[in-house]
Length: 425
Image (cartoon, rainbow, N blue to C red; front, side, top):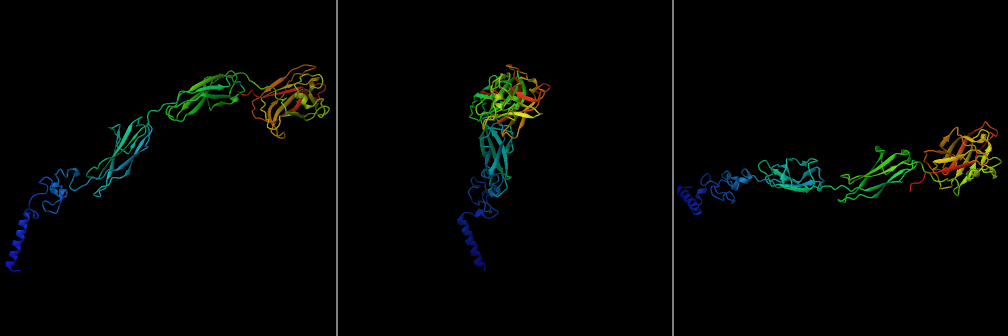
C-alpha cells in the first residue's frame, strides 16, 4: 500500500468515529463503568472494556449490585419446606423437612439454615427439629429455612403448624358393685351405671382396680372371682376413665362380703335320673333303690332310704341332670343311716363327670361322722368346697362305712341334698 492510500484510510476511520460521537470508548480509555447513575443496570458496556454492568469491577460499589455481595453473583431461590406432624399435640416433637431445595442461578452449591418462631417470636432452636416437650397447647410454630450459596442468602421458605388446644379429661362415671351385698361364694362385678363423657370427643376407656379393706390387691378388670374374697371383708371398686391423654376423676363403690348363699336343693329337678352301684334287695325294686335318697323324705320309717350290702366297696350312688343341664355343685348334705349305726357312710368322694364314664374328684371326706337317725330322726351334715366346674353327672363314691356294729355288712344314706351358689342378679 502506498502512502497516499494509507493516509486516505486513516482519514476515513477518523471521520467515522467523529460522526459516531464515541471517540471516548476506545479500549483502556474514557469514562469508568458506573460513574453515572444507571450504568450498572442498563445492559451496555459503557466503558468499552468487554464487561457489562455488575460484571465490571467499576460497578462493585453501585447500589444496583450491592445486594449480591460481590460482583456478578445471583442469590439462590427460596426452598420449599414442610413441618411434620401437620396436626401436632402439645409436647410433641416437630420436624422441618426441605421438600424442594433452593436453586442457585450461578450453579453454586447451597446450604440450608433453620430457625423457628413460636407465635411470631424467635426461639433458640436452630436445627430441623423442635425437641419433644418444648411445644405447648395452642401454639403456632413456624419453621424458616434460608439457602446460602457462600456469598449471599436467598429468600426464606417457611411452613407453620398449630398445636392442639389443652385436653379436657373425661368426666367421672357412676359405678356400683353387683350384688349389693355379695356372699362369700359369689363373684363381684363392677357395673358402670352412668358412663363418662369427653368434651373433646375423645374415645374413653375405663381402667378398673380393686381394694380389699383399703389395700391394693393388684386385681384389674370388672370382676373378682369368688375365691378371692372372704367373709366380712370390704371390697372397693375404683373405675378411672381415660381419654388416652389424661385420666378423669375416678368413681368408687364399696361392698362388704356376707356369709355364703346357695340355691335350693337341685336333686329333685325334673329330668333327673338316680342310679346306684347296687341296692339291697335289688335296684329294680322300689324298696331301697337310689331314688329314695333324693326324694326329700327324711323319715326313716318305711322304705325312704337307699342302702345296699357292703363287702368292702367301693359302692356309689349317682344323679344325672340330663343333657345340657350341667350343674356346679358347691354345697351338699348327707343324712346318715337309719336302723343301725354301723352302715353309716364314713369315707367318700364327691365326683363329677361330663359323660358318666370319666370321673373327676371334686371333694373328699374321711372319718365322716354322719348323724345316726332312728325311727323319725332328722339330721343333715353339710359340706362346702371351692370347685367351680360344672358337670352333668355327679356321684358319691363310698370307700368305707362306719362298721364296728351289727349290720356292718351294709351301707346306706337316708337323704342327699345338692346346691349351687346363689346366682348374681
